[in-house]
Length: 544
Image (cartoon, rainbow, N blue to C red; front, side, top):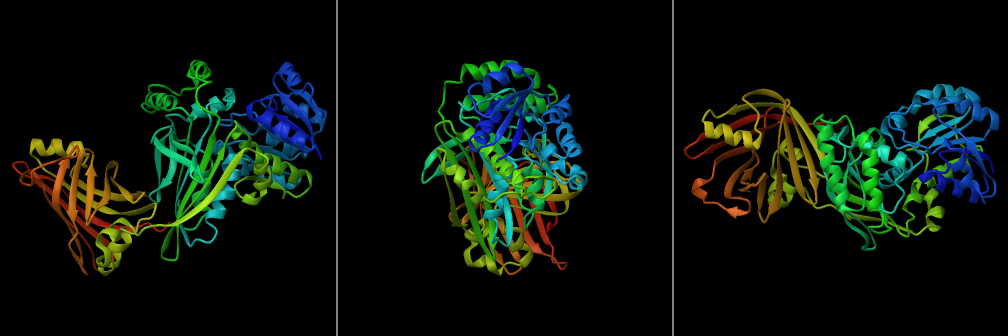
């Protein structure tokens, strides 16, 4: 047992952690900026002592006065925060933990590693749902796979979960802001709280159905690609329980993305008032899910871990890693040095604590269907040139890079059509194509230099259907050992079939050149308009 200073010990997550540490037999110094709040929280709690502790000023004096065996920072927010507390701990030889989920803060803690080793103390950042719990689960899901292609994580909190100032500040700090993600075998920039999608979090068929989640910035985005074979794409999404809250924050993310607002932090007071007005709505269930797609030899495998918390106990989960690591540090079982918590724990470490909460969790595995083109072409797929097969071997996420040349039609109507689809201007460009697969549907995002356009491909019987916005084109795929072609068989707009004689004339071919590269040619012409676009070039898979 030890004497632990918990900074923010009476806050949303800090209060829960404090109670857990007390139940484990530790003595806790409950720190915070308000002496009255600390004293009120400690009233009636054995071994809890209120302490005025502001992590931004005078924290070293507080630590020198009370000499804790361990310091845990649960105050937040850590976005944009410095390392005053862990630096003070290193200087005084006191171990340190935090519940940070801020990407830059957690991933930057290693800058203190040499000093921490010299002081023989453990300095561990991110002892929370991410990256400590997520790291344990992801490593287990990937343990025996030869390659990991993609990891998608999502977290949805109960509307009745505590949303204090620090939690709100953390969330509002990245809504609409640039977020760097490793996808399509390269870094790309997306924006916080965008790319909304519905995610179900089910255990044994029950749980949370169709919760809205959007892009959140977490340490795992930077840690995971370099940690697993295949350098997988990683996307973490988070959300609140109520759709209107998610939609409102999504709408507000756009003025930040467009630069009209610096951030939503200045709106915190108004947004918190709206949150409190709706606090009684919704339920008490929270959930988290991690879906990994990878390969064992040639077989595609999907593994999905899900946890669902009821009775309002979801906010307990972010405190569990800190409780476990606090026990290890005080028992002398933590290696000195400064690091993030992604590698620190295993799933079994959480089991005893899960058993005491109203939570259920499970891991399910399924064999993935063959890639889209292999399903449509059946046995003919294996007779394609190797470079063509490799490009269409998509499970979860992939990418290819090369060069492309674009010619645009000069007819005014052709230029309008090209602009609507976002075809690039005429020229030769470095080319990168990202492939993202979900539920058997592939999204191809083509980057010709700074110009980008995308389409979605899916199976319909023995045909490939490619969608550009409201337009859909069905293609047959005649092929031989030299390559394949795409022959249009029908088309539609807004799901309404259109006459074949009005269809654009599309020439599309794929083959392998003498250098072993994937080659392509796409030419689109329309009746009365002439050429809309013609683009050709080469691609090679990105092996990073």
